[in-house]
Each structure stands twice: as C-alpha cells, then as structure tokens.
Length: 354
Figure: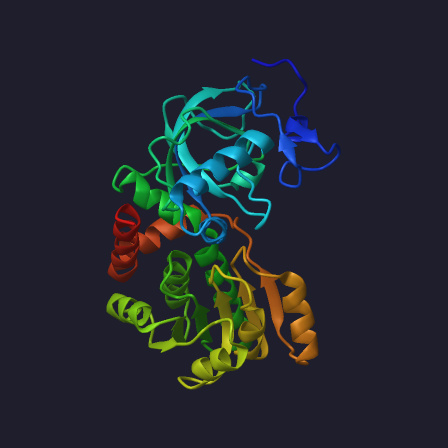
C-alpha cells in the first residue's frame, strides 16, 4: 500500500503537466501500488469507444496489427488509453484485485466489474502485448492492471448476461439515461409527448436511446441510419416508429429525412461516431427543441457556431457519460426490450467475426 497522499480525483497520479485532472493530463502514473482510497483491477477486456476505434482503423487502412501496435504505444506512453487524435478512450472490465482500506466504492476483492469512467482518466498498464486481439474490433482481450480513484465509478457485472454483452451495454449507458431525462423534462414542461429523432439509431447507444425515449413517454420515434442495411436491421428490431436513410453529415438531407416522417424533432440525439453531424442535428430540431450530442466525434465549436449561423433557437447538451442510475437503466432496457437485445447481440456477432 502506497503511503503517498492521495487525491479522490486522482491528482496524485498526474505526471505531466502538473495541476490538471487525470483526464486532461498527458501522462499518468500507472504503477500497481495503490493508495489507501484506490482500487486495483486485473484487466480482462477493454472496450475502445467507437470514435477512437474508427479513427485508428481509418488511419491504418484497416490493418489490425498496426492498430494494435498503436494502442500499445498510446498506453505505454501515456499511462492510460487516451487517443490523442479523438481525445477519447473507452472503458474496461476486469476483476477487483486489491482494495484500499479507505476506498468508498464498496468493491470487494474477487468481484468482476465494469469501470464506468473513461479510459482517458484511468491509469492502465498492459502486460500481454494484446496478443489475443487482432486489432479489428472495439472489444480488446487484454491482461494488465488499472486503478480506480475514490471518485471513480464501477458496476459489478450481472450474472445473467455474457461479459461481452455487459461491456457493450455499460460502454454506452450514459446515452439512454440522459435521453430519458430530457424526454421526461420536455413532457413535463410542455404537456406534450415529444417527437424524438436519433441519428445513428442502429448503433448501440442509438438503440438504447430509442428504447429509453419510448419508456419515458416519447410521442414519436424516428431513427436515422446511413444505408438500407442499417435500416433493415433497425426495422427488424422494432425500436422506432419510422426509419429513414440519410447521411448524417449532410445537413439538408438529414433535416429533410427527419421532417418527412413527423415534422422536425423536439429532441434530437446524436449517436453517430463520425465528425460533421452537428449542423444536420441542429437543422433537424424544431425551434425550442433540444439536441443531445452523444458522440466523441462531435465538434462543439461547430455545433455552437453552426446554431448561431442558422439562427436556431435550440438547446444543445453535451452527453455526459454519467447520470445517477445509468447502468441499472441500461441493463433494464436490455432485459425488457427484445429489439434492443437482438440488435446488441447482432453487433457482437459482427464484432467476433470481423
């Protein structure tokens, strides 16, 4: 046990530059010796966030070996998985290996858990060279250790779900929780059930956001996807009232597609893992409506300046990966919605065979 004074937010782990929080740091101290309020996790699997994995795959032309080498380089150099190009990371699952006597997280040695904080602020060491990962999927079998601070968040893995399915759900559990909150607020403030449009609706966060909106009282659900194959997948899941096909990076096409099936959206949720979707989301949203940007590919200056340039009176929210009860809500939606579960399982099959 380290006797070095610790900070509940991990300031003691920041190596450079000094004076910033771990997420903003360039490099963290990822040593396995823990402070009295820390927890050490034996890593089993990483889940790279979609934007980061896509960027790495594109950068190296789909060469999995080079993607693997780049992830190893980033972790070794920075003491965390923090993609310098996207600014994002992901999360992980593993087994609790050591718990400091002052840790407030309520974890016990031997529990299998998912970390619900980003890898961009989690001290991480990889010891197996990612030998079991071919670099072609977001889920990364790995060996090593990670450290949680007193202000970190983790959830014990449920016994009734496969670990890779739980990891996929926990990776995006902030999106449905925030969507549910906004939909409930809209209905309470206006007395109307909102029209909710989800861009990137056939993805993991998109599917859960649709289900959360439905459960929270949405009046109409529109799912926007980029091609007919994704449209078929979403239609079979039965999560949206209308499925429309458009390139979310094309502002006019996006707005026309959404408005064609129910008028402009009162709430628009952006779950697309490519940049350039900001203006389309704004155009697709009715005056006085809300846009939730739940993608690490979002340019927030582009969103703010684009809305200003369009004279669009819309509220824009940054998707916060943490909302109280978010993990429990996401699991409840997965268990109660056959469409959500089938879509997730389909995505996992694609990942395993990619």
